[in-house]
Amino acid sequence: MERMEEPRLKVIARIYTEYPQKFGIPRQSGMETETEATIMFEPPYRNPDALRGLESFSHIWVLWQFSRAVKPEGDWSPTVRPPRLGGNRRMGVFATRSPYRPNAIGLSSLKLKEVVYTKNRGPVLKVLGADILDGTPIYDIKPYLAFTDSHPDAVCGFADAHLSDRLEVVFSERASKDVSLKTQEKLRSVLKMDPRPSYQNDPQRVYKMTALGFEISFCVKEQTLTVLDLKGADIAPEQKE
Image (cartoon, rainbow, N blue to C red; front, side, top):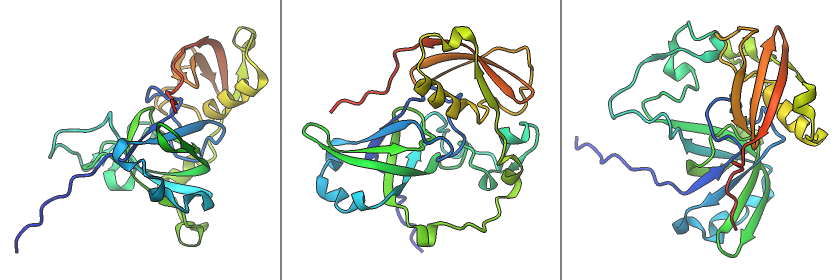
């Protein structure tokens, strides 16, 4: 039997988020819903007809590329070390959502806030709940269908054990200075999910991450994350129209 030619995926769009580095990105889509992201289509796919009817859906599926985790063809491992298991237990790659896969493809369910039709960039999607690095290539977008995509009685395997992991987030006097309560709440919604790998649990260690336009310094003791300092990073996602 003649082998069919393997298809090549086309990048149809890119997503611009407030996560310029991997450290600190929410581990799953929909876990942090305060921060808006923007999906901008590449020139060949800016036809408004391609999105006709999408505005009537509340959520979408986004198929994207782990652009910082692409390995040479044929280079893959059947097992990985999930961070939520402390990084010291191996699980099958197809039993995890690790970026290190035979095909570096991610899947996210995002809330569709609105579809904006611009003069220069064509249709632009405003979404909430992104767990994706700024500038990530997107392969496809599909509507989320609750009657078939939602499974309330689903069992989540070893991931269930960490479903309720949350930290109390407090701000030092220095960190809260000149930062609005609204901004603090946005930061809290990201940090409460504990951005650290599970195997890092040193209460004396000061962690640094860049997200939501800030360089954030914090430490974690028991179940409390303290934001020590915030510095404006001037790295808000590009959203030209």
